[in-house]
Image (cartoon, rainbow, N blue to C red; front, side):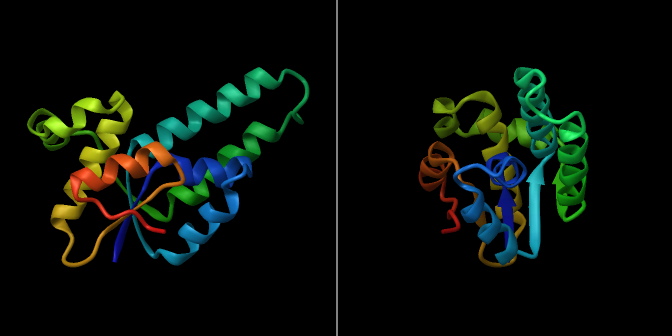
Length: 143
């Protein structure tokens, strides 16, 4: 079964935050992983922001190590670019109007993957707000 991963899962794995155990479980349970190109972009942005904000508190290699881990995770995911079909979903889906822009792109991409899936499809997230936005769109959230 294909599973869409948003950046909250991979960021939890990389940052080892309070959701890391749930993120690791979600990651390990899925073999057919899909995502928006935003997975990489958001993760890079957050990692670089964390490194800059830490000053000298983080070891010099921290960012390089996290970026290498990110690259390894990305090798296990089929990535979809933001293209006209994603834009068309956003244009045509009024229920995305309540989302932040990046969330709307993620959800529109998940909807495209779901429509192409031959069977069950899930969204993997550890972000409560993202999970809440999935249900009205007919997207099942992995638990």
